[in-house]
Amino acid sequence: MNTTDNNPSQAASLTPRQIAFSFRGRISRATFWIALLCLLLCYVAFVFAMNAVPSDSPYQDRIEFALWILYFPWAIWATLAVQVKRWHDLDVTGWAVLINLVPIINILVLIYLAAKNGTPEANRYGPKPTFGTK
Image 1 (cartoon, one colour):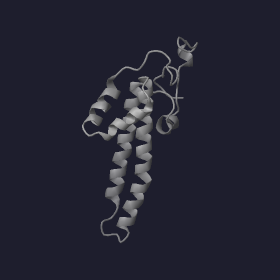
Image 2 (cartoon, rainbow, N blue to C red):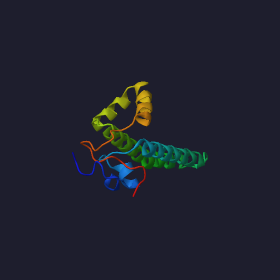
Image 3 (cartoon, rainbow, N blue to C red):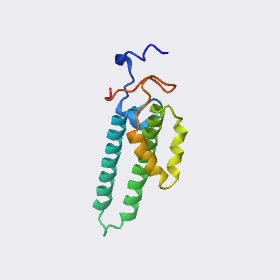
Image 4 (cartoon, rainbow, N blue to C red):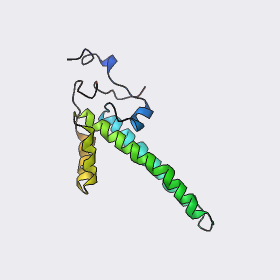
């Protein structure tokens, strides 16, 4: 057993950048919910940006394509990173995120990740996550 297991001051705390872009570590359910909310808000901003492009502009297609190219790679990466860290909190390999490719099951998995308690002690993916960030 690791000495950090019973010491809450040494529990894992990630920066927002690590939460969104790193595939290492663990995040709590609360952090998972907050990350999903942030991703949803980014999506809403993306939709507003797409709707703000004038339909009579000769560059409409190019502008919309540029917005897609800027948004979707980032959004997919961040969504996968958040889910992998949530799987790690459950002491499951991050490759389990591939189950998202199965329609209908992916919704059930999202509910499971949002509701299931993580392992209470340190596991092979790191110490118990704290709620906040650095």
